[in-house]
Image (tube, rainbow, N blue to C red; front, side):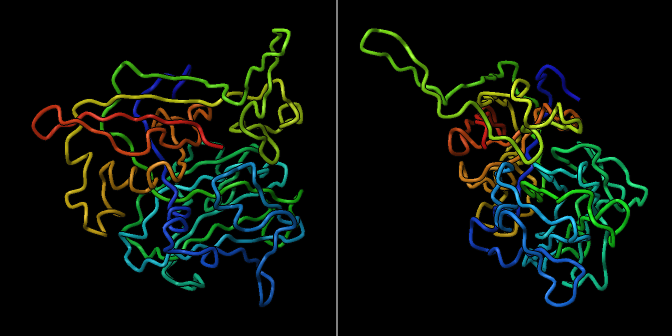
Length: 350
């Protein structure tokens, strides 16, 4: 756990859902919302559309009516290979699960109907952020509104083409939620930690880039500000965990303003940790363990944001954020035989 922005081993949580939408392998029709009603069981949000769940913008949320009762977010990865379809984390950003009294579980299977071969990933998961154990051990019970992060062991040896996230009231699937359920973003995929810690010369900046200073004819200066920081989420300020009304998005004085930026240098990374063995091997680009295939490739350069933390073991929400690559791609220099230096320049996304 990190405090005071003390950098340890960084980790990036790479979203497979938006990656597959961006490269055209999947379409939004492969991601569905359903409930336990008769056919058709499709759930239509009362505000927002299902695309909002996968655009990596937590302020752009959907609302599901409380009377919907149990509902599911269904993912068809389109991958029959267990190694290629594997995942090991789920983040739900911008939710109001405390107010709605909502709990959730994560499952995967090779059966589209989850009729057989089902594994519950959330049972025995690592609960990093806002993810208390429910009375039913299959479920995660967020104690706060805001966001939640869990991880589990890679499921490359299991039936895993289809994933589903079941969300229901804490009293059971036939109970209405206490409030309409709101969700800003779903991020699911694989994380990768850097093989070495960054050098001591880490740079951290907060850029108030939404403000221009205008000089009048008389020489007076005025601030013209288009934005102060990230938009608020459904029930909280960005990245905050809150239950009390005094801590929610109406508390403008406690909101984080400005845009965070990180600049890190890494020395003597082994070539096996930085590059793929064969950059043209298609399966290796998805199922590798190197930074090129699992980080730079899956972010598509600066195209896709990702969940990033300065400490891979952190349970402190202040160590996390959504970022993009600021320099567009991989930059590296060979320092010694089979060892490389590289830089990481990140800018906060919203």
